[in-house]
Amino acid sequence: MAEDSELAAIRAKRLEELQGQYGGQNAAQMQQQQEAMQREAEMKNSLLSQILEQGARARLNSIALVKPEKAKMMESMLIQMARSGQIAGKLSESQLVSLLQEVSERTQKKTTVKFNRKRLDDSDDDDY
Image 1 (tube, rainbow, N blue to C red):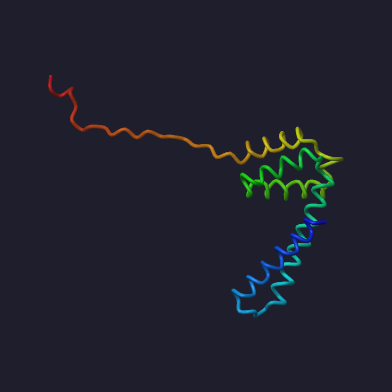
Image 2 (cartoon, helix red, strand yellow):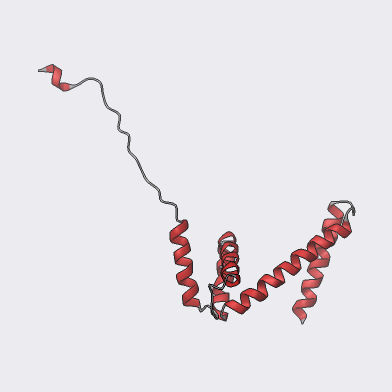
């Protein structure tokens, strides 16, 4: 419960900062947006906790620390898979790792190197 009070204090401080930045105008609208974002995040977290085992959830959180964009992409993909019925039961950490590998292979950029060598106009064949 201490985390909840700390989280509420952080949110209140952030709201004050935002109100200070925008001169207090549209404070109600900003608060509504913040509450909507908070509800969305809570729904996402509850859904992810329903479809991921604890180890898989921990791995996804550690990925979010290093590559937040990849973690967001995986979270949205997992939620979409759960809503469409592609996920039956909870995913283990090993299943999440294999899913991550599949996504990495599909999104991996393939680089090619092409050498353009300059050709000289003068040829040694003419000298003989």
